Amino acid sequence: MQSTSHTPTPASGGTTGRTDLGRRLAARRNALGLSRAELGRRCGADGHYIAYLEEHAAAPSIGTLVKVADALGLTVDDLTGASADRAPGRSAARRDTALVPLDEAECRRLLGTHGVGRIAVFTTEGPAVLPVNYLVAGPAIAFRTSADTAAARARGTEAAFEIDHIDDVTAEGWSVLAVGELEAVTDAGERRHLAVTARSGPWAGGTRSHWMKLTPKRLTGRRVVHG
Image (cartoon, rainbow, N blue to C red):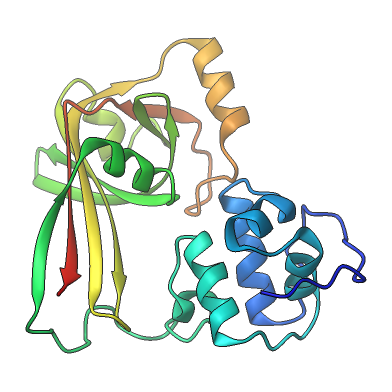
């Protein structure tokens, strides 16, 4: 991948790309907490080239898009926006498919690549599955909610947390499932640390300052592969 060292590097905190590609790239990079230089090292470029992709109407080669998308934990369609309006999971299945279990280290690595997952809890009306913005805090998975939500009321009970990724282009994907007791974070110092560590507020908006965490007793994952 060629770098454009003559291109000045703007400040790395914004998402002001002039194209959808630039905006998506910057938003994902910031969500992962990567500088432009760090992302460049991951995909064999430099910070100047990443800045150029974010800030200009660039037309990178498919090889460049594959490397950048892979470094960001995305597919090329995700990065370019081609999959934005497409229902996932509709590509044709392949004959040479295998379901491969993931070890705990790989599951933990994959947990660190996402920012939205699903928490499954038991309520008085039956099971409920709720999407949440989350972060990995040591061994635990933490998220914010309101004190009167089903997730908050489920403290002290066994719950499950799940993330997944589907690649319709290659008909591949993976999922990670964490099971453990759901706890309310009551320590003031721990709550402050989580608030500082969180890279964004909950997408649902509103006042969601009630921190919950799940420390997995079981952490499992599976990946669909071919050939």
